Length: 319
Image (tube, rainbow, N blue to C red; front, side, top):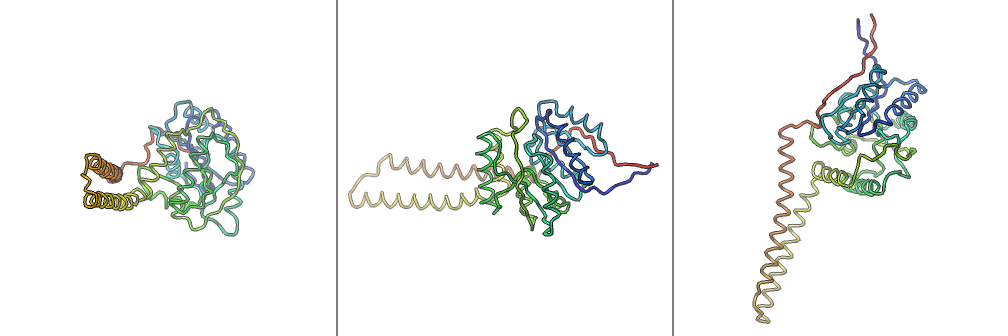
């Protein structure tokens, strides 16, 4: 048997977390989209350490559609971006599309991304954005907060989402970053020279419960800040200058009171000064410790994900 390695037009990556009820419909509708466009595609599902029967559903989908589907199961929950990175690591399409597993973004909206990618300006990245998001209030607040700081820190346009399309070249460039924590959008903004945006439909999630809670949103925000920016170090510099000026001003004030009004320097003023300066020092040492721990992890070359089980799609073959 001789294996034919066919060129694939599109790779669709789906990070999966507790979504057993939506996966079959997601695949069927995605397949129908590419059949209507007469485009070749592969679909990569990455199960990110969920607690339901998602992996069992994925194995059935893969067995029934071996020419289209690859399924990977991570050994624990690494987060959406790291799971997406795993899919990117196995993508073979000329273009890569990422989409969530909850059907909030209808797979039929993929056509809009493709139409935008095939436009005359040939963008490196196409983002699908939503005017009205059908998330919980906690998720909406967290998303807006993260998007605001992403826009501020990375000079991002602020319309990004997890529904995106980018070229194979951009995908290969992103894969060169083998850090423990991956933030896909920051890397896309770093490498892409031409980014387009297209408005897409956004429906209510068909999952019983969102994969993001307040704690996970806060943890994700802190990881973005510590792994992708030097903002805490800037805060340390400016905060140190500010605290030094305040301490100097307080010192002059107490010296003035002593010399002019002959007021004794009391216990309270000394304790307040000590506690203030000590608190600032401990806070800054904590930030330095965080950065040192990140450097330690990177130097140890901890992978961004570990695959527990995998079923790869089978290319067509001939005698």
